[in-house]
Length: 271
Image 1 (cartoon, rainbow, N blue to C red):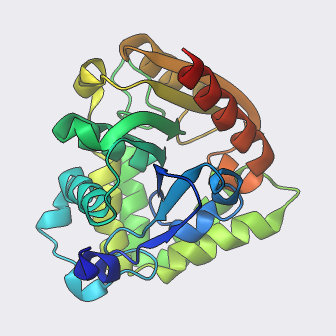
Image 2 (image 1 turned 180 degrees about the horizontal axis):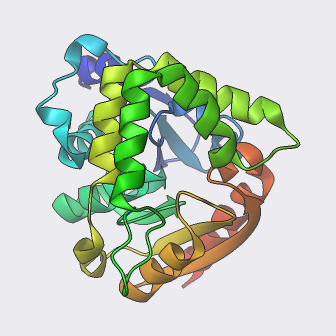
């Protein structure tokens, strides 16, 4: 057991099962965002929760701007966590950018993965018309990054409700905004650049593991066209369009999220 990685990534292991299930949080979040979902799987799985370096309660002194200049640094975090927790053949559950990080990790060291659960994934956030709709123009992202630099708290409070898309439950937007604000603004901006300027469309066809794509309704970060694109370009993938709105169904609709994941795992294990 590598205690250094445990401290660095604030790893927490729970559950009574033997099959590992690794939960990876999205941009601006931390492992606490999974608290409504992971307990449902503790009986049958070894649950692994962690924070990327620079997020949550990770060791900020371990942050290296060069390592985390692109998604590969976060891929290494995932693989380090899997190795430190002896989680070969895990069910990987990744939210948002972590869905792509999980895909890249599975391509690099496939033995650590058995299935991929991709919550609100997007292989490219920028439009590449006429063939691809990612949801954003480059100027949109550049303006967002400038706002993060000039008024980070204002950016967080503006963006969180649009991402959450549950206006009748402002406490959810508040939690997401607080999570954004608890992240070092410089680190958050670098993570945003690595996320929103990435293009991993060519990696989709290389995926070998069975994959579940969870597509939310009214998701401004990963619109419906993105989920359909991923399904069309990923072998052995299943697309499930959820009733949940927004980009964070594990927070806003945990019951539906649990049901969809559980049904998929049961179907895959039967087949």
